[in-house]
Image (cartoon, rainbow, N blue to C red; front, top):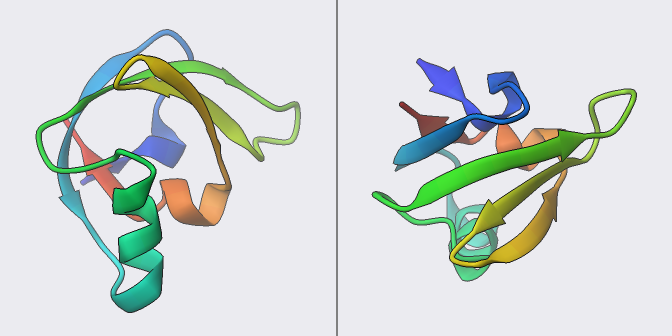
Length: 73
């Protein structure tokens, strides 16, 4: 299982599944990250938090904890 947190800069990945539950999962989905969508890893901060991605045509910064909940291929 590979997550967004483990992805390298420059990769384009497809979301397979969202882990987590309740309000946390809803917040991730509200940011546009849903099953089947493509996510491009733009950059990461020096300490790895946050991760900046491009999803659905806009840039999004995610915390490591949230990126860990997104399973990708």
